[in-house]
Amino acid sequence: MYVFVYGTLTDPAQVEHVLGPGDETEGETAWEFTDSATLDGFHRVDGRYPTLAPGGNVDGRLLAVDEAGLDRLDRYEGVDRGLYVRVAVPRSETTGTAWTYVGDPDRLSVDVEWPGDGSLVDRVQRYISTSEIVVESNE
Image (tube, rainbow, N blue to C red; front, side, top):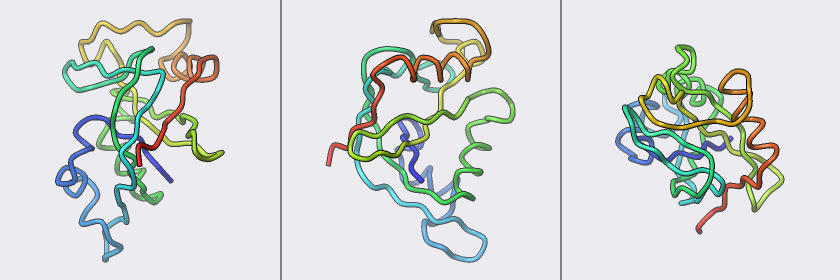
């Protein structure tokens, strides 16, 4: 599966710190960067940690991971603590999707408004489903 990364996880050394050396060695997870990419429909906002906000576009990378790697990324991004939510965004070159992480504006001290009511994940998913959001490979 693929994850669109746009902040600290664009750095191979940081990914290796979180996921291990990148091959399937004992106790480690498999991962690799595939392409540089652009996420259309979101822009990056820097606060306590980088996050995404509606509109614009943001450059990043596509990171291929296995299920164990995705679980480790969730822990790193604080999904269980409500720091970030993980959402699927469409990919332009396939019928598939890529995951990406969107931070809670209040927890990250950024001025970002997500339209609508409900939880952050519900508002972000509603925005994705009603907007022209797409991850495009730059390779």
